Length: 160
Image (cartoon, rainbow, N blue to C red; front, side, top):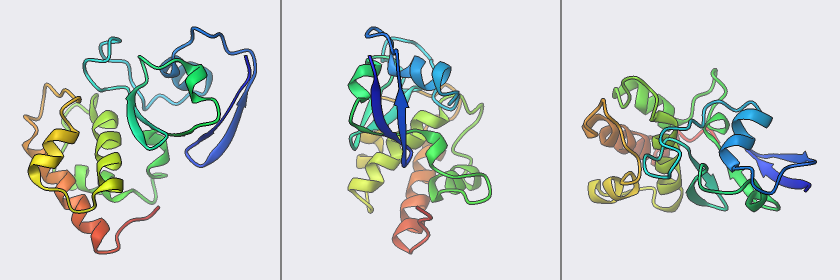
């Protein structure tokens, strides 16, 4: 089947995509976007979180075909290295990551939250991150990172 969708602000057209292919496989193998990682492969860890149609999804559980006609956003769309998104800056400055394996999923869940609610409470941040598991940080620094990014975005520090 042919798929046409918007990925990180650019139109993507793909031919001959098998109906059973996962969105995770399409992103990593076909498109070379390695930021979205497979952790558990069962939708339990949140490592493969992307934003599709404005909502977070576990890309390991979503068929690639579901992306057709939709808008997708992956961690690669946040910043370009020279111009980091406020979330990326905050995660660096506040040490919101350790090994980094879960970070892309945490960033995507945080981005989705801040797009809907630019001034979340700690409880709202915790709730938005509930589907993202981290074995390194204990979450305190992740929450502080999201709070710092929210403040920076409210103060006009959003580079999108």
